[in-house]
Image (cartoon, rainbow, N blue to C red; front, side, top):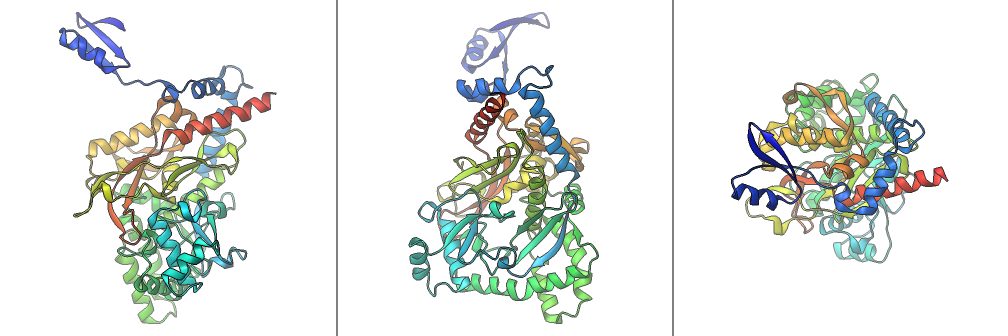
Length: 481
């Protein structure tokens, strides 16, 4: 313990166990407790790997210098991305003809027996929607017998909220990153209440899915075709931050901006008037409608930053209701997984943490791009819903600057003097500081079909990042050899 003289009084700075400071305080000695923890949460092997990845920054050929250069390139690709909604695909099989009897889901790959309740419920609903079975029991038997293949949305350049289920007949938003030419896809928002993404699969849910396929998607496709060049999504996200969204768990402003962009071409189209009214009513009544668009926008951005040799930037972060997983730009398609944490927040009346499912959904792609928990300072209105204070929201965003590569000048946070949002999560910095990325999230009931029971925040597990550091160090060691 180091001692120093502060204001003429003998004081102490305590690093580590807080009880030491408490003992000194009991003796009348002022003690400053330093918020410090050992790198890698005290894991020596990971700590040494982290040290070897640093090297001597004065040497341009050392691992640290090479990673820094790779990360600068990945961050530049993120900042320069220009995602545009260019099309509405009427059926997912039109993009992926090989889907056949395949269902996509959120998070890293997972088998039917291991899926959580909401995801199993969503898979049963998708089977019924596709007509592969007539009853829930038949659908469950088909799934249990291996009659349907599963795949991760991310493996098809796609994302979906909560269970994230995408089946061959479902419509998709198609987003093109005009800077790099890559595409990303998302399914469409079903609204609120009993919905497939939370595992509901009643006739009401299936009827709404068929309406989306038969009315909403064709209508949006026609309206979008009348907009030269499509709808630029990045300006909507940027403006929404200035209007109180963090563009993950709150999309009220972004949805309103999208509504304004699509309404006139929709009304001016040849679409039957009743259908136009239904579409506008559906979007207008669903403040989270833009979430799926935001996710596809972020996916198009992050895929452009993926595949940079040597980069330690996280390009995907997702949860399948059992594990949280990340992908790293310089480490290919490998997922680094750990058990998902339980969200912390406010529960709707009648529900508690005992009812909750571990964190779920592809929507954490928003945090990798600098939204959600990284931009929580932009959304004081969301704070009450997640059970915190404005001061805490600002502190979460400030924290994220310590574990990110840069800040995005196009994404201003008003309460931080319009500083750009923290962008480009670096696995090295997460492991070094012990600061885990903050994710804003909805809380799903652990049983299929009950739906959302609250909202809050959750932190990605440290083990994902520690595993990635070990893999990155191994990759550099092989290169040196």
